Length: 114
Image (cartoon, rainbow, N blue to C red):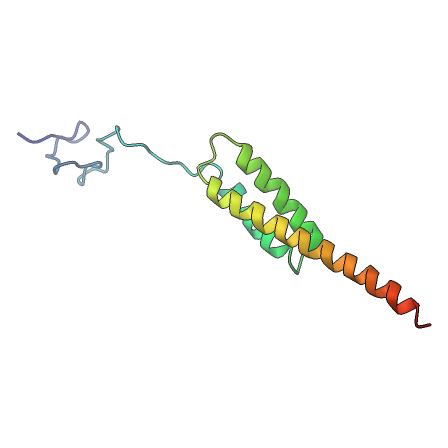
């Protein structure tokens, strides 16, 4: 004997999660994922990667802040994406700090010639 939809009464297929007739969720035992944290995690990746060139240090800082917030949110379903944003942000921030240090070192060495 098969299962029937509680909304429309049509017979359900074996192990169905949704009634194909009316679209009603019938198997609520499965974990349903929401998109909580998706936007914040995506912003951290975008700003972390844009920190390498167009937004320079500002993008790296914004990406760093949003990724830390995303990683500390217990309901965030996209922690992996926030970790990627954190890595990109740290990488772009380190890149620009290295460029600044090398620029000052080169300017200092250049001043000895004149």
